[in-house]
Length: 246
Ligand SMILES: [Zn+2]
Image: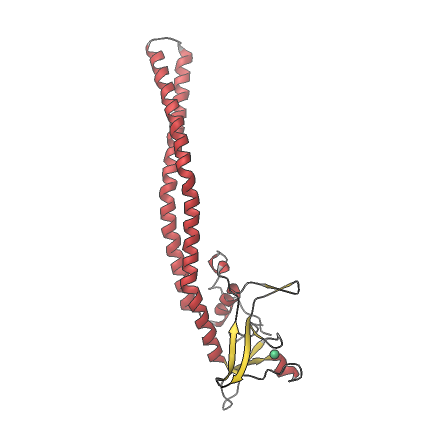
């Protein structure tokens, strides 16, 4: 079932581990809100948390927190990762290049030697064949050197491209957050990796602790997040995947 509420089933009551779910209010009965599903369905004996919170207020607070962590951290991490990859590739390049250049020098020495042999008429046909082989080898080594140089150039371009893509992706994501409930639910899911609870993998949730004190009534919330899945190619913020209500 697709939830019409951003946080239904993603938010969890800290007192009973049940879901917070959206409750639609009819005209004249206040605004839509979230409340603990166990309290609502099974009563205060099962869960004493009777705090209802305005839907828009909790949505905005969660999205604001997400925006706060996504933008700077995600970009920093992504770019750091890209740099790391580039560095790893580049470290190997000078060694490769030196090895090829050594082979080339040896090859040139042989070619010079063979050319002299051909010029003095010593060795006949066999020398000529050998010279052709060496020249082919030389061409292959030169091509390898070109490839190494290309790789060095491609890596810099790659980094710029990756950085730009990630920046675009992060900006898109931030722009779309909160605009469409199914997409935003999907982003929130991806941000919250599965957790192990008593040996079982369960989807990560936003744990909401009710309070009713001098501040008024409301919730504080806590979620464990990871943006590794956002950076992966698996991100699909435009395909409208649905959420599950509870
Ligand atoms: Zn509860």
